[in-house]
Image 1 (spheres, rainbow, N blue to C red):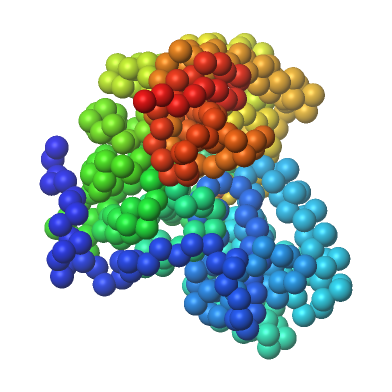
Image 2: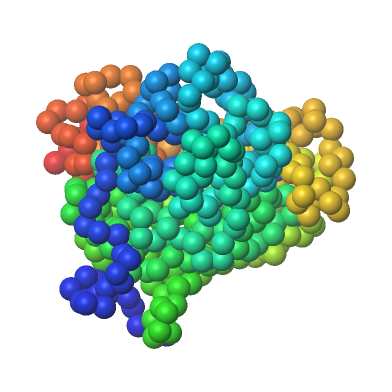
Length: 478
Ligand code: SAH
Ligand code: SF4
Ligand code: F3S
């Protein structure tokens, strides 16, 4: 390893950055009352957005806002939005219509749009959606208090400036999306990759990595508060790269991952998303060295055809992707789960090229896949340079073919888990019965079993006796 591994020593040292999150862990505050105003926040899109809503809640909690789960009585309603596909934007527009009916009843209610749609549409949003008072992009959340007072003064509030530095490293998120067992930690923001179909580089700006010390501090605080799992988040975690202000410390993703894993053997570490061009053997070896780094890699391929991948500007081709998968199997064994994202019907994709995506799926036999048909996004490279020329019915048919294949592979993968003992971290009751608990194994498969005396946060060895495409069923063994 070329660079010294970042350790936890800093926790005892005066060298700890002053802005690292305090020892506090903020849990969902829906029960806190008696503050002057209340905030209702709803999130759409990727985990990064859900994680950002926790930061926004923290900023506004410090401004005197209670957090509420009741939209009807909230003083401030924020939608943290996603622009990734047209449908995602339509969902938010529909939701704004519903919110409008509340606002008619309670005209004092403020409505704000945050996140990627705010960034994409900017002040155009205020013209298009009359009920919106605030439009705030993903790098401008610190400005929310100021913008809200502007709205209180009768104006609209807009800030969609993107930043090259903002990582919100010093803000302790309010754990809205947490069951007290598992939490998200954002380790980087933005994306520099410019995949031709993707709006994210435009809505989230340039890639930047968060101070490694503040990440370790946040993870340590979570462990101290009883959390058992953290997911390190970024659009492209494998390109994480942080250098301290004095230039003496350099931390890459493998080193960060190892440092988080070393905090406690009882803490599970997950991460998402890995870009196939960036995931290194060093990361895979780090995963192999630590039992508590989950054996699950989300490695979006997007297509199985090299010409389409080049048009998508993914910067790898099919042989490269296959080689990464072989390396994962070689270093981590067949035990490591792999999932993907696939886009059906990208510009000019032929039937043969679509068949290549199917054959890549057969080659990898993914544990899970998020699949979409191509949705042209204004301003992207593809929208500017390529014709969106695959008819909708064809896109949908191709997508369905991919979904059908994945169903078979997911079921096959789950079936392989039958007869084996899985170490399950209990997260909740099963959706169907309070007599059963639900948790996940290292490979991210959901496992359900009779509760006995186990509780949320326990690690339980479960012997699996049956499976479906989505879950494993079993019972606890010693
Ligand atoms: N950073 C991640 C992806 C984030 S977006 C990565 O590079 O893998 C999540 C997924 O949405 C993408 O992987 C892609 O499959 C899908 N997606 C993005 N833009 C899309 C578009 N214009 N149409 C359809 N699907 C899209
Ligand atoms: Fe979008 Fe590509 Fe960046 Fe992922 S890596 S967020 S798909 S531009
Ligand atoms: Fe959507 Fe923005 Fe995430 S476009 S997928 S919320 S980064």
